[in-house]
Length: 474
Image 1 (cartoon, rainbow, N blue to C red):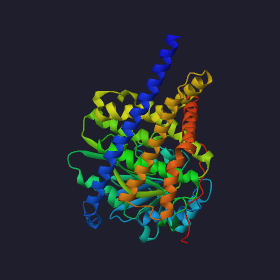
Image 2 (cartoon, rainbow, N blue to C red):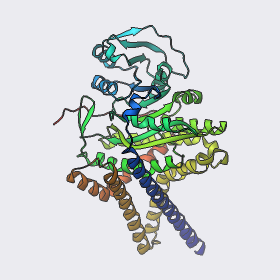
Image 3 (spheres, rainbow, N blue to C red):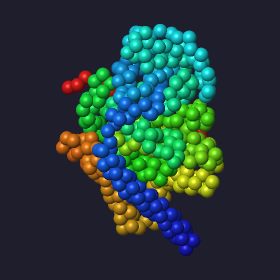
Image 4 (cartoon, one colour):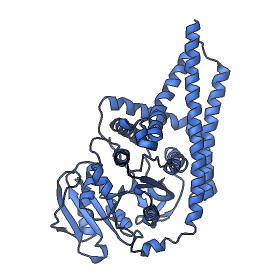
């Protein structure tokens, strides 16, 4: 009996210690992130980005946008990308074997003709069927690549083989970028002199229910749906209170697939996007960091906290579950492929901080949370639980979750003020109170399903349908 009591006590201590460590890391990240964002906003207020626009030193950027069955909005999406503010850039849209009229809409919308272009395969990709350029000089910076279907990573690799820029901006074709997104994201490449900037990430925001016309964001509004609103809050926490801090420590492992700028030479040297995982964006950053560490070359992965990219979040529980299932499997692949760096001092911050954090507090967190729930049910069933301690712990965890979300809202209000209407702010606060109860458990469940599917050998993305973002102004 004493041994069993000791096991209960030690198990409770382990769960409590883990929770306190996680809270401490979140709080420290939030403090560092807030200070960094405030400094960035203050610095940006004195910068004239038009100098970059006219600078001959600004490197050429190739925007690579994979497209699969995007016929409904592909012309408007291309128009949005072509109208970005930057001095020297090209847009490379890769039609990844679409079964609808994606290619035909582009051919007709931009007066495209097939060009006899020799493509050197620097990174592996499926066969390219044709490369198209416009007859109109006004859109001479548009290239359309038609290829056999191979998935997003394969399409990105095809774009890398075709493009001519020194830097590549890999995006989702249905994203809406701020007009000055490239100007803001290129700044670290121009400023850094002591080390090589190999990648830059940016904040992703959700555009559901926002006013969008011709690929341009006109008015920001909070989504009406609870599920999408909870994602808005979740993205705030992740992008404003976490990734900024990791970039500050030069330990950022993930540049979102929706928007990231990479040094093309480094991407090619690392082998391009992997076909072996559904988490190709994270795995590529890990592989690039690993390569630079093994070469012992000074490098940096930077992050821009400005709201630069707006995308559509899943509006149905089923689609959201598939997305988070895939994210979990992609994370597990990345950790497995690069396990050599785990707690390896030869990989510095990446090996000693970033990899352990993603293992213990990103991948393992839902597993431990589920195990804690099962342990609690067991204690209740056998009358072994201390209800006073239990309710105090649950209250403390809930209060901290609400506090962290409130801090993310406050940070946004103090810096970028994206949600200006009083009703939107009220919705955010209400979401902060309800999200831990109704939304978070589903995310944990989806992650557990991702773990199960991973060990079963599941590889596919699953069907990820979208409602579409193109809407006329009200």
